[in-house]
Length: 170
Image (tube, helix red, strand yellow):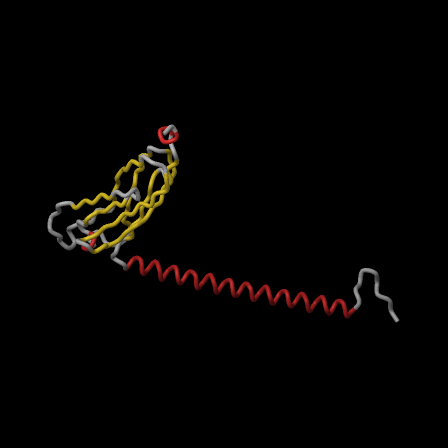
């Protein structure tokens, strides 16, 4: 009977090790296939969404407040922006702009515009305004575009106003 060399493992141990290696390799290959499928599905969904967004004539609205955290009295600059969609999207042509400041005040503005002409009239894409908050607190600001009483689109931003020297001294 031949003895195994110290560096050589018994045949049964080598067989088990080889089985484990094959199992790990198969599992790894399965993971790679699944990961590839997930990437392909994700890319397809993104392309579908991008194509849908391109075809959607309705612009998307976003609202940004600067600075988002400040001391009272705080002068906040708010910018609402319409991105994407058609430049002559009729629903958004010459709307009423409403700002709800979150401090129990509202500003509403309607401009006097020329009649809408398809392909010629362009929507306004950027709305910028300042508002002063005299008291500390967290404020939820709402931007809306509306026509008559129908809300066309809206966006929300939240700011934090901390007590300033005037407020602390009272």
